[in-house]
Amino acid sequence: RMSELEKAFRKFAVYGDTAATGNDMTGKNFSKMLKDCGVMDGKAVTSTDVDIVFNKVKTKGARTINFAEFQQAVKELCGKRFKGKSPEEALQAVCALMEGKEPANVGVTKTTTAGGVDRLTDTSKYTGSHKERFDESGKGKGLAGREDLTDSSGYVGAYKGAGTYDK
Image (cartoon, rainbow, N blue to C red; front, side, top):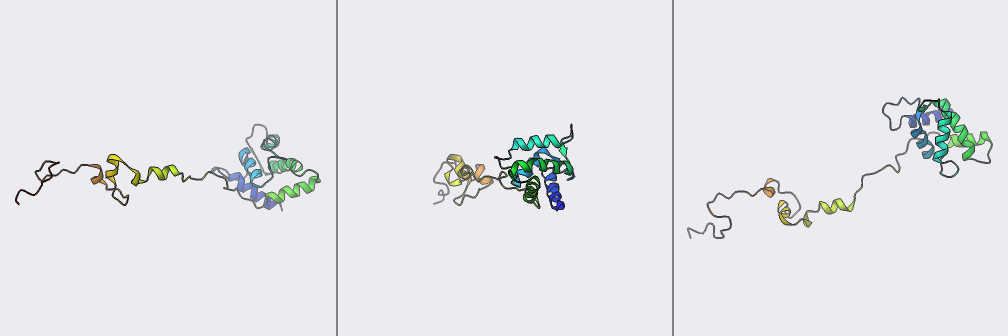
């Protein structure tokens, strides 16, 4: 039974930390674990409660807790989460919530597809000299769209009758 809880502990202990061994858990990950597993509900158990318990069970001067200290912290919080149950029942209920859980990436910031980006990259709305850089389909013309290509035919740029001399 404890192996499932220990597995969950290890998964959360290494979450977001490439150097973590999985034997110790930081306060941040402890808080995340309790939130993801539904132990910290914001009413009976708040993030403040979790931080207080974490600091109570950890060794003085340490920044992490081991699995034994984690179990102690869970025992302290289970009575708060499941009021009216006996300590053993509350501990069972909290363990059941945590067993086999993995860190969730739900609610983690996702890339936005804001309307502003679409508006800024819509070449049909470009005006002035920028409009000249794209063809009708919106594909860039490359160098031809950025530079005035020199006309070496011998005629002045604005002359409309180019090529009519021989006629």
